Length: 118
Image 1 (tube, rainbow, N blue to C red):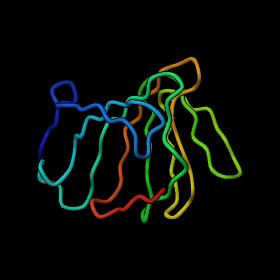
Image 2: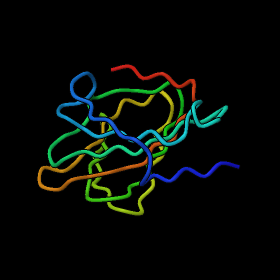
Image 3: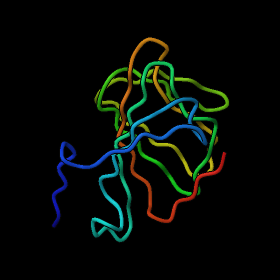
């Protein structure tokens, strides 16, 4: 067993690419922490920042930890709040991020070998 303290995990700012602004990513679980099948990170989006429409080769789970966000597909858009859990099927085009006036943070979980295209 391994315990990772998110408050002590290093984070990095990321701009461009899949993101419409600057986010803060805090990797928690991955090969470096000894995981063999899953990876997980906290992703913090300032108000108005989101990622672009994209898809993953595997399912993705989002657990909302702070603020208010939007999770959307081509046909649907939902506002999510702390405690909400979202399951995004493999291959489904989607985006997620903060509302226009509220910061947003989620924890994501995907398989280590999941690939993202946008």
